[in-house]
Every structure is written in structure tokens, then in C-alpha cells.
Length: 364
Image 1 (cartoon, rainbow, N blue to C red):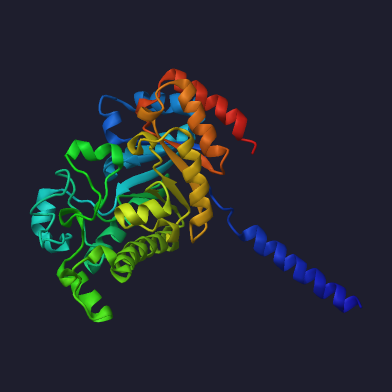
Image 2: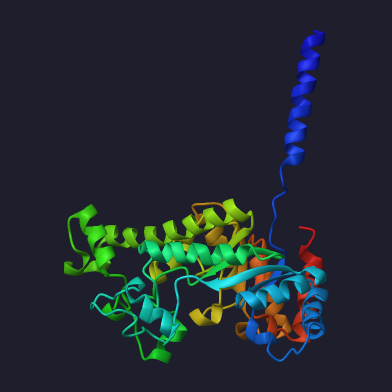
């Protein structure tokens, strides 16, 4: 009996030691915002940067997804740490519009159904120069880039954006801007039909997708492209987490189903710490309650469990009352938090709303 007790005691002690040695899961703060290097150009010194960050911190915006070059991130990271703001590097994934880079790596870019590379002709806007997710050199390049950012001291994680194909369908309210009525998959915006994608699909399905009379009707062709983005996201995320232990998050489309249809992005299968769906209700001619509906649908349909922070657009919630309603719509439907686009657009009155909402939800 004595030996059994000793054995059980040792087993319990071992379990406790294992639990004690296991690092606690890091989560995103309740309220965050997207921001970028451009917001800081007029700030001449670190004191000005600190004052800017403190203004956000006082209203419980405790984290930022920050876009910027490595040298800027290295400058701002220690200041964010001093202010106690969780800093994540916000980096576009599949888009690279740099002209020199495009000239050097033209074959890395995606090709539309008409056989035109987005290097030759960008869809929608000039910066829409989108990589092919099946190019191995693209995956290697992106992994290296995100690892370099993740290794910067004071950075809590990396944040994917544009981790998708070109928009096959724009949000309803944006289509008139480009004189479009997208009721079907238009060839100019249907990617990718490069030699890699065509050969890989042909090898697997015994048909060249560019010869299909109606590619949009092929479930195999749709899944083939969805899987390419899922594989890319999970490959980069896995390496970043394994080599740095830092968080990986992503800005994504409003729901997994919408994302699959509009940009061939099945973010429900992304193996990341948190998804931040951009639920910009005015882009879709929807009311504020639509924010909560998207949150609820996403939580019910995502295939791989992860936290969800609802992204809201300040232009759609311009006054304190509408901002409060937007936050409540997200949180009351199960969101883990809210991300504001952008930090620089938050007025003093809106920050008072954020502070009040923090008091309401921080204990939940």
C-alpha cells in the first residue's frame, strides 16, 4: 500500500511539474486596431509615438496589427512594449506590387482565364499583383519574410492579409466603382490558370481547366484552388509557430462561405490562433446587425476551431451610437473581441465608447 501511495504521489508530482512547465496560451486582447507606418510619419520622436499609443491604451485598445517595414517595426516594438500594447506585424501575403520585384519574379504571379498575367494587367487596381499559391518559391519567400518579422523582439505575432486569390466577386457596394455587375465569374478576374496550376490539376483530374466550357461549375476546380490557399496558410503558420512560438492571425472575408465564393479563401480550415473577419457591413449594403450574423455563422461553420475577432470599419460606424451597436452585435453573438479599422480614425468620442464597452465585456 505504501509503495502504491508513493507511486501515485510521484505520478501526481510529475503531472503538476509538466503542467507548470507548459506555457500559458497567449490570446489577443479584447479590443485591437489595424494601423500602419503611414500614421507615424509626422511623429518626429519616440515621445510622440508613445503619446499616440497611450491614447489608444487608455481606452483599452490593448493590441495593434501594425503594417510597416522591418526597421519601423524594430523602432516601434519597444515603445509598444513599454506602453503594454500587444504588437503584431500586419503583412499582405499574396500581393506584391513592387515593379522591380515583379520584373525579377514575373513567373511567380497568377494568370487569369484569358491567359493574362496580373504582372501584365492588374485586375481592379494597380496594386493587385497577386502571387500564385502553388509556386514553391513563393511559399519559401513568404515563410522567410514572416519568420523575419516574427523574430523581432517585442513582436507578439504575425498577421496575414490578402491571403487569397483575386476577388472573383467584389462586395456589392464596390462594384459600381469599377463599372461592374458581377453576376457570374468573369474571365478577367478568374485566377489562376498559370502553367503550374493547369499541369497539377490536369495530372490529378485528367483535364486542363482552361479547356472547360464552364470552369465555375466544376467543384473539383474550385476545391483545387481553395486547397492551395489553405495549404499555403497552414504551411507558413506551422513554421512560424514551430520556430518562434509567436501567434499567427489573419484578416479574412466576413464568413467562411462568403470567402470561398468571393475570393477562394476557405479560412475556416486555416490552422491559426485567431481569424479577424472584415465585417464591413456598408460594403455589402447591410445593416449593423449583419456584423453579429456573420460572427454567429462563422463560429458555427469554421472547420478548424480558432478565436474570432470581428473586424469593423469606422466609416460604417461613424458616430458613437452606431459604434456601440456594432461592438455589441459582434460580442453578443460570440466574438472573442473586436478589431477597428483603423486606429487613426478613432475619434475621442468613439474611444469613450470603446472604454465603456470594455467595462461591459472584459469580465465575460
